[in-house]
Image 1 (cartoon, rainbow, N blue to C red):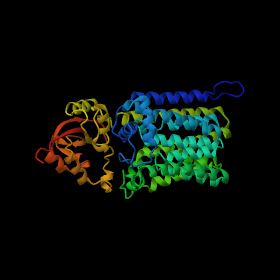
Image 2: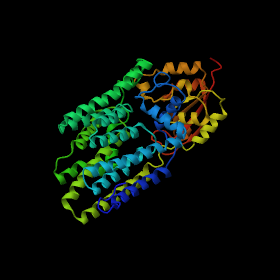
Image 3: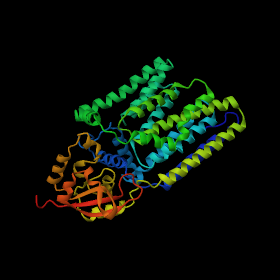
Image 4: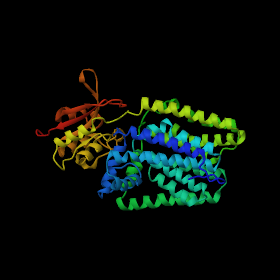
Length: 473
């Protein structure tokens, strides 16, 4: 708890922070649903690790190893269910907001600290990405902890946190590079050297051990599986969506014009690095913007802290509070209207019951990475050959061969396949199954067992369970 040094009273900004975090908690708990997302992959893979399997060797995993192991410990404590894992992004977002408050407070005023924490925690990007479990939550919390350690003048510990972030997702290197650039800019040579050595040691030791343990497959899956990757989503649309929904954060750099003081390099240069990455990286997704949002919130917090020091008038505090209430209110309203109930798997329990009734214990199923892992865990059925990540991008880049996948499915006579589909007028199926296997495969071997409509999904409008029969082959 932060106290007033003279009166030992809790500052009013702490109450403001608690209130804003309470709003975040209420929103998250009220809209806690199973959703179509990569979170299903992390949930199932962590379950496999908890069962003794090894990433890369026993199942395909295209990222560094921290999340499956970290989440497996979490799952053993709280259960491998979408409900339990749904609390992870909430908990980490709360930690992030408190850290942002502390970082700005250490470098400015309480009003600036509150502003940064509120602008981050109730931003549209945070609300929209914290409704499902993903890698970005762990990455952001680790780099923010690294920032705290750096502010405490603990460069070795800071480097360890940044190294762990890279071991979560490779794109954390972007923030690491920005942080190193900040240390160089400030001519903190000793801190920079200690930071770089410690971060590289953490990354190198873990990568080396895994390389020795599982062989070249570690390097191939983590690095080569991303080579030649196609564009994930239209970058222009993502950026325009971000500008429309978090315009207040986008204005952070303009806030500097009101201050005209030297911007701390640890805020400025990571933002530059993240913006550059956003502009150049082809396989970019909206959730990656969560890290940039945190740094833009730090930027705004610093700006408001400088203005607070410069103006020193109660009226300025009132203006900032009213501004935060208006921005947060607009953001929350748009989130509830547009995103709160989007990509929800409403029929999950029904799909689980259907699959359970049409399979026997131990029978493997296969299907879309967005829903099949949840069904498999709910029904107590394994996924065929632990092929959990069936994202079409790995077929498009040639990492997986769809014909070989089809041959394997036929050979093992997998009877249940789950896909998302797009049904158009008249009940005709426009797209969906071909993202997993050729449409011809379904036409020749499978029939539609049952489908369930879903609302507000981004690409499809139904979940389908296919019943396949290979007796004639």
